[in-house]
Amino acid sequence: MRGLAVAAAATMFSVGTPVPPRAEAATAAQLAQAAYNRMSNAQRIGQLFMVGTPATGLSSAASTAIGTYHVGNVVLTGRSTAGAAPVRALTARLDRLATTGATAGVPLWVSTDQEGGNVQVLQGSGFSRMPTALTMGTWATTTLASSAGTWGRQLRRAGVDMNLAPVLDTVPAATASTNMPIGYWQREFGHTSSVVTVKGGAFLSGERAADLAMTAKHFPGLGYVTGNTDTTAGVKDGVTTTTSASIAPFRSAVANGVPVVMMSSAIYTRIDSSQPAVFSPTVVTGLLRTNLGFRGVVMSDDLGNAKAVAAWSAGERAVRFIDAGGDEVLTVNASTIPAMVSAVTSRAATSSAFRGKVAASVMRVLTAKAAEGLLGARLSLDGSFGPATTSALQRWLGVTVTGTRNSTTTRALQARIGTTVDGLWGPASMRAMQLYLGMGTDGARTWNSRTVTQLQAYLNTQL
Image (cartoon, rainbow, N blue to C red):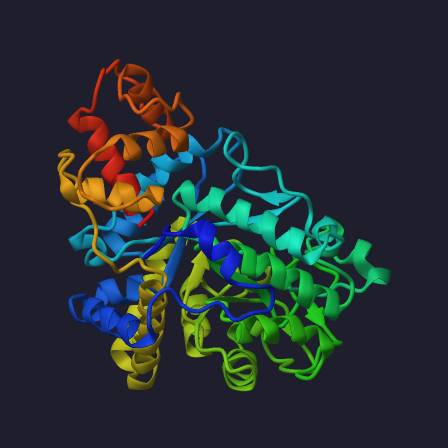
């Protein structure tokens, strides 16, 4: 179950210790199969896409992608400096879009890029300002894991399910300043694979203990390139092989249970010189799945706007990635969704082999969501503060679950939302609650259906 006993979990998992999934494998598989069975083919294919929307608000293109094309995952992009409250309102709104008609009721994975330094999408009150990964790499491992736990809890309490981090690319010190995608921005944890393994692993385990799905990127590493695949075509790595030391941080992350691995869009001439890694069965299926034994979700880097894949049409990009063994097509540009979904749908209709890959990928995504707690019971948005809502609130607060509101629950909620802790729920508490949820204040003196409904939507992003 998401969001429960976060503080306790942070002390349970030592750095380098495998983090168990959020549900037993058999249970996750059963929940995933049940979700798969109730989906239409279009809804299943929609689970294989993650679409971008500004962190400052839901775009109409992203809303259409979810409602019309059944896209099952979202990434918050750009920068938001307004703090956690408006993000809570946005993630609750996104959660409401996962309707029976859109996604068969399967919640969206809501992700963002919260690496630190120059790559921190969510900022402002409620989000600590994070240093660069290179700075984090100089910290004591226990300090880094503890800080990552704090940052992870901040994301979860904002309704974010997944962090597209950590960066596990190893950039040699001598070429860091000319390594445009990673080193130039100090996104690496260190300049040797051993440091990246340990420090990246500390970041990973700390945020995983805060109940976040994490994404190791950019496999098999962007440390030996010069150009940025987002802005440059034909970026090549002529150094990395299947046995390079720079693979070690990814191997460790896989061994320690990272649920998602993001592919690089560079070409690795000593592994597969014919195509970008994101389209390469040799890299995705051979190296990552077979050699490293990864059984989780393989995600692409951005296939919407990146120059590295501009030579292929939007539809071809999606088909090639899934055909190579990938699962989750990330496109920041929501306008590419119609062509991408159409191409995957058409190919699945005409190729039994590809259709089998699609089915396997959908099950991997659903199983991962189930393991993270996304397929559990959810609150009805009925505006009634009954036992079910009270119990969910108590689980979120980490107090004894009684299903009945009491002074202990009230005090814990007041402490969580940052108002006077007196056990008495009145106008000041209501105002603080509405501000916490990112909704307009209405002068209510006690709970009203409008606020309860928003609270229920928010709790659905937490539990």
